[in-house]
Length: 188
Image 1 (cartoon, rainbow, N blue to C red):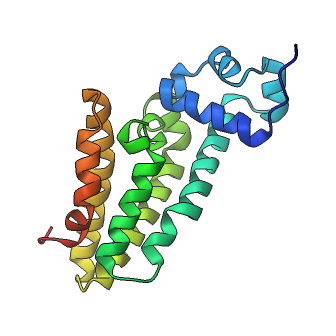
Image 2: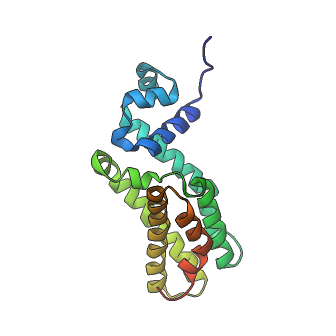
Image 3: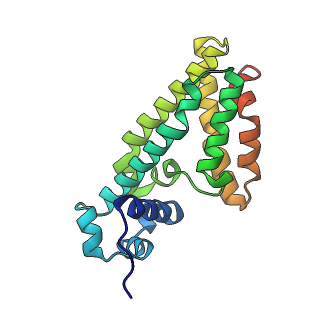
C-alpha cells in the first residue's frame, strides 16, 4: 500500500522537526529521509541543493509562522504589558511550552553556524528592535529599551536551553509568565 503524497509544506514541517530534534549536523540525509518518508532522490527533487536547502526552507517556515502569528502582537493595539504577554503566549505555543528547541540554538553551532549565523543574527536583531519599540511604547527611554530587548531575547533563548537540559519546561514557562516584567519591569 503506497503512502499518500506529501505537500511541500508537510515535507518541510517534518524536516523542521528533525532539525529541532537532531540539530543540523545530526540530521543526516538518511534521518531526513526517514522523517519525511521520502527517498533521497525525492528530497533532492524538493531541495536541489540538499540539506542546506532543507535547512533554509525550515528557517523560512519558522520565519513565516512567527511573522504571521507572533510579531503582530508586538505591533498591535493595546497596552504594552498585554502585548508583551500575548507575545510570550505565542512563543509558548510555538515552542510547545518550552519542550521544542529553537532553530537559532541548533543552527548557530558547527557547520550550520558558518552557513546561517548571518541570517539568524539579522532575525535576532529584528526581533530585538521590535521588542525595544514595545518597551519604548511603555515609556522606557530608547537606550534602556534596547538593553531590555536584548535581555528579553536572552531570557527566551536561555530558558529554552535550560528547559531542554533539565528535561522540564518549568524554566521556559516561568519566563513566559514573567515576560512583561522581563521587558517592561524594573530597570535593566
